[in-house]
Image (cartoon, rainbow, N blue to C red; front, top):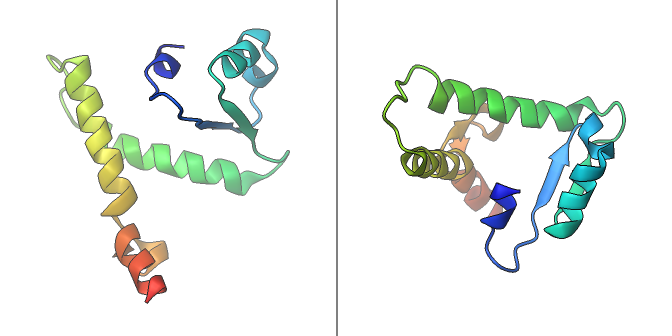
Length: 112
């Protein structure tokens, strides 16, 4: 609920999961409705959807979270660092699946 309260007005994010039990929990369903969030679930037995999410969070933990001393870091500093990392991950991080290009470089190469 705290994260949903901080969303910009008019935003309509999609909340994706791998069909966890929380999707049947009345409290979760009520939160989705109250904050106008769109629930999304993988197709039953669709490992590729879950694999993408697991891969992202694995990279996030290895590249951003682990091997750092977070003691003394404020919540605001952590959030700012996380925002910066996700921005870098989504635009500048080079990916083997893109032939060693970043997402931006790959998109520009396909647009040309």
